[in-house]
Length: 290
Image (cartoon, rainbow, N blue to C red; front, top):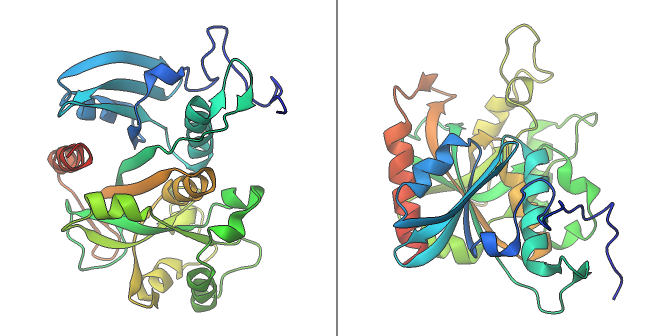
């Protein structure tokens, strides 16, 4: 079997993967990812024990036990570029023999759930409620750098969206990937579901205007009115499309659940979203370990 070059799979002197600074024994099969380092402790404070705490750059990992099962909480930082690092390195931990630098014959599937915060694009979605991403609609262009994506894309949704919005050719071509059916069934009862749009930035790419006008001043309005076979775009954030795309390509189960802290239609922002985030964390911990 062909060995993976040291320039492609970079390891630290202790044998850990380069950015996450983790070895295989440091993670569980159930991984909850968050953008903010501080939110890792929001998860791990519910653990009955913590077996390891490891940090490198913005990547903080706590692995411990909840409800008798191992759980890993990991911060990714913001953006699809960081998701590219995190998902590839998590996959390497379970599916590549790091000593031999060879892909394992028997591959493993991780359950990776993103617990985030997000802004709603529909006026009827309440502040401090939760939204589960049935699909990730990516404006970021990340998946365009990988092969075999035609096997995972929901092209009917993408084409309808491009037509509805009059998508500009100078922008990265959107792509759509659905969530893991396994995790939707396990975690989704009673939670609002919809398409989550993933942007490559927080300001212009999400239609915010400070001193520079966005290229398409009506993009958010177009997203609000988009519908396809019962699906609508519920919220905007910065990670889900890459999570779903890379997860599908690598054979992992992925899902995003976000606490809605702002409503872009009603122009509301949560007075204090931290209690709602904690409720989301507890709900997911209970369900993923059931």
